[in-house]
Length: 275
Image (tube, rainbow, N blue to C red; front, side):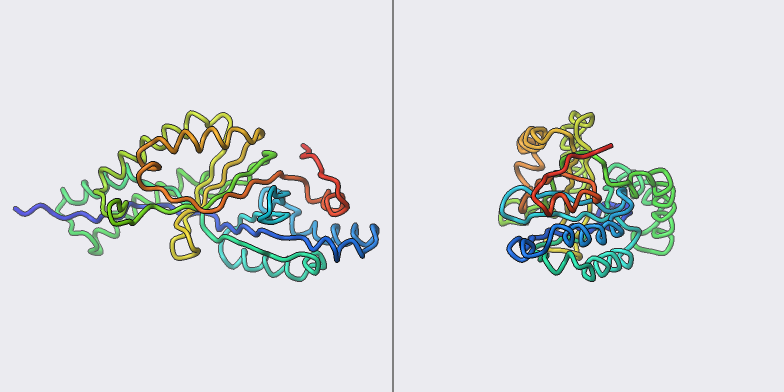
């Protein structure tokens, strides 16, 4: 009997919708505004960031922007609303969004995928048939319930964030998408072992952006000490999946501060993270 050809695409779980907004402050225009008015402008913006688990602001380091706004929401409609709310603030009269990134929190299920596909094949169920889709959805439904806290996490409260987008290479000699699923699963397992060694220092949230933005994934790392970003990412460069198949976009590193301290930031004082 001919062996059934299984789909090459791993199953994924999707959760919160995520929007990064990188903003440049028009300092020359802002300096013409009185300190009292600057405080009013800042206080008006606090409503958008009232729930610190859903929206956060960071002071960016380097030339890529002054601020980064990070938003976690239930769906794209809610993201569209928060983007619209921000655009109507007086704050945005003195700011320009110079970059952004749209994605959804994603959990890859390589191990579960292999088991699920194999179990369905052993029952003689052909891929992509209604019975196959039903079997897959039963597995995904159980996984969604079990993984709900990871799919809809609060924004971590750590002082530092490091965000970057990334792709898997599709070059002439190395193409991630042409590798067998078993090989991809093996490499991702080894890749994950590195991250787990830093779990007590770094919180990581991966979001998928295929079809949503210019790269395939977004990676957010949160920590109280920024040097750990360098150590973690450098060590990951030596594992096979990163060394052979990873392409990285621009990196954005920022310091979180409470939205109620935005007025102090606009007046040239970098607030500390409280709480």
